[in-house]
Image (cartoon, rainbow, N blue to C red):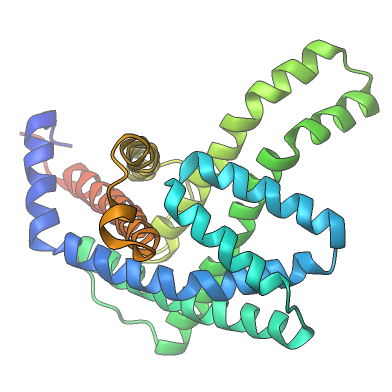
Length: 282
């Protein structure tokens, strides 16, 4: 294995980003993410609508914690949309939202797979139905991991209280749990990113690793752009004044764009590191 310095690795990565047009592909992903988002919200809010007060409480908790990792403008847009949807819930809307969200999200996952194939310099040889099944499977797995992370964040205190009561732990456990629930939720996010980076591209079977260098960097970049964008908009919220009600949608698209870019950069890093490992030692 050849040793390579950080600066050389950064230069090679930057070249790959430009050669593979990651900025353009991230814009494509942002479009797919936006298409899938509102059918997903339609499904979730229609489902929560059947839980009356509990659903309203969960919705408020969800919006509050979304506000910690997303810019404020999209959260306000979500709040308005969810109020409109919840006032007219129905079983047909529930199933339509689920099917539409899965189908549109799987289109985005297929686009991610295509971009990661280019990152790994491989061609797509899988049949179209297999690619679609892999995309649907990753979509469901991503949704489960994301919901698990949200449940830990939203109901982490209650979960800790139940565990402490069941096993007779002291109050010190409850305090430690409240601190650890955020890193645990972050681990679910890391697993989600690595699921995509591992199974989406058309690569030979490899041993599953819940953490990879590309996955760690992707999560770090996602957190950086999320909190950075939120901090910027808190002090320089010019979108709403310049674009009016479209400002929230523009910020949301920008956040989706940066999220997609973080995932693709993670794939490029994994591909580059795997390529370096196969080089003979100099």
